[in-house]
Length: 170
Image (cartoon, rainbow, N blue to C red; front, side, top):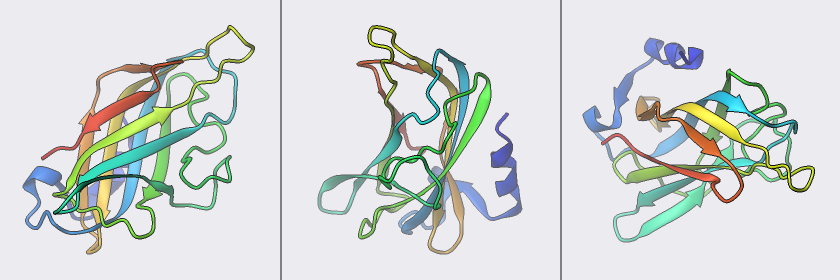
């Protein structure tokens, strides 16, 4: 069970499909992942999320930005903190936001793709990260939260297999 999801019960929540006004612009995302098994020893594993969405005229894609000042990379599109995806049977919580100038709406959002770049260190010894649960919430500009993804399909990130596309609940 992902503990962070319970916190949203105190605020206005809805699935993207049941939203009264689904064209509201999203201003924040909370990403929850449950790490299952792993064979990893690095404390900073690059991870990012690419949002794919419809603007009304074109399909667009943009990486989400890290919403807090922490992180183990100076690249704001790399969302990981020190120790994320480091411990077996642990939860990873990542706050994120659209990149400046990106107008992502609840109705326009189609998929969120999580990329976890697993290291190959030492050479020839691939490190794997299995995630057993993906839950992503989005907050609109009126402070309403929408459950965008709820997927409990296990996925193992490994060399050459680093992207997992998650369909938004509509």
